[in-house]
Image (cartoon, rainbow, N blue to C red; front, top):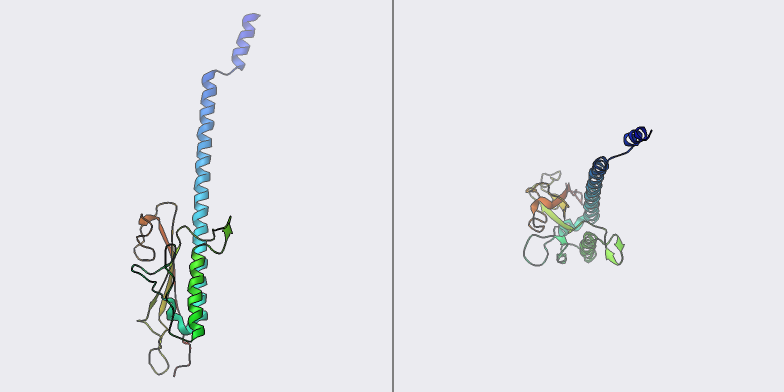
Length: 209
């Protein structure tokens, strides 16, 4: 009777090795889940930064279009040497002197406001600006080589191609973008530099015959 009872107990019990194996399998599964969560959060943050960059691109395009009589003022050159940009570690744009006093003041105000947005002024938390990307920088350039033509065949000044770019630092390595220069060399590893760009043209501001 006792021997039979022992056999029953051995059949229904678990050995220490079986318990350890089960715990090991559970641990591997939990580690995989934790890694998946970390990757998901990283992807979500990268997506958030790109959306913020696209918002800033469209914001600057709207500002230039609204003040198109002095649109070339927005292709700025900050004080000091180096690639012109606004945002992290930059200087503000120089005064504009191309149009009326009101138009010039609006252009300078737009650039300063955009600089603040690049620094995250749109959202704050605990007194700190948090509404932008990591290390956000913005660039505006103008190509006047391809101008629109008036009805009489003459080129219309100020109707060239504008390019607005926003650069920031990504969380992981991707590839080095060599076609867009905004923020180049300012993020250490070029494979971590992210750049979004928007190219557009301002139409004629007057009736040219």
